Length: 159
Ligand code: SME
Image (cartoon, rainbow, N blue to C red; front, top):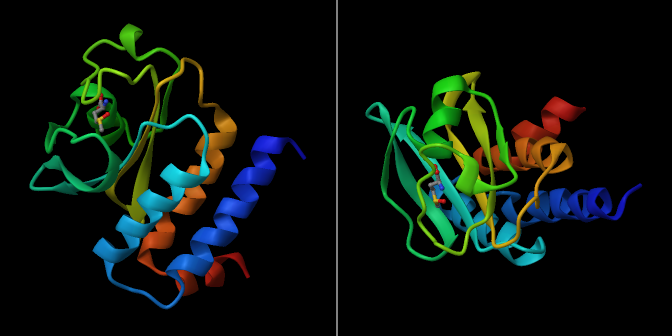
């Protein structure tokens, strides 16, 4: 298994252990943002945005202060909210409409989060290096993000 996948397997287990027994969403988003930010290499931002009142609003995050409201269809996060598909952006300078919260960001990945099959929000990772993210990140981040809704539900689905 590639080193990156091994790191994510460990991160998945750490996330389940860390959030096990907690159902408060703010607490879970806060600790998961911190865990991801501190365990994955080459990050300068890890942010949750919730879909609320027909826009995205900033949730718990790590990194520099981030923009608080993002319109659907705007920037990378708003594009994901509009299409409900992940965006892997190797060079943010080439993404038309990219919203630069931290000028150090060079590449970015945003995955949608669903709850009960409804769009709930996004998880956004920023990197100060180009080409940081690929399908391995997408695959694991889509599994890790919904752990905020409760470990039992996720574990239950796997078994
Ligand atoms: N770059 C994002 C905005 C969110 S910040 O990076 C935390 C975007 O273009 O949607």
